[in-house]
Length: 249
Image (cartoon, helix red, strand yellow):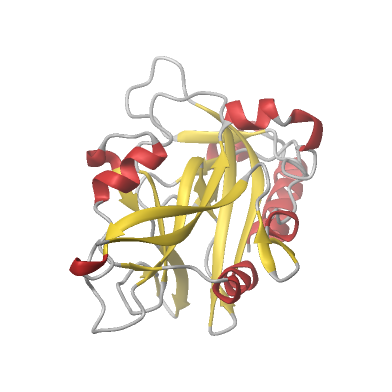
């Protein structure tokens, strides 16, 4: 017997932004886009051009299982590139600091984000968005995300940790997502020409055009491009650092 679950599909691709160019000013403003994208009419979620609530069929006889290949087809990617997106916290202690991974750990009812792990590969001048989430009133680091991605909910019963098993997202769950997550436009990607395996940089920050950022290739965290500091005067570099800290720390 087939049944359906509901998930959120975000489409922040260049093509979709161009199609809806007349209404994308808020999307690329650099402010939290979820305030405009998570909308309800008469108590029900209302689709927008950039976020839709879609239904996915699954076999109810096998515990709400949606195979990775189904999710990959929705995103238009190869199954080998399907990525369960993680979030990271920086923790600083005396004489040392470390980064801790959060989310996508498989706990029942937890949000999970599925995206393309190659979303920054072989791509230049694509829109880059930044995402973070809140846990125990503490926000994670801002991280880069691009293109299409799916927001789903892990199965709400059982021990958790089971891949491909999901619960259907209700309006209440979507509201919680809108409160616990933030997504904003961060600029456009640029790669170093002629460089193999170079870091992906972000330019055209919507608030501070003089900021240039890099994407950590392992965590997708947003970092200030230290090379930029070397190119600036001491006074200007201090200003850039302050502007970056204001937005990211």
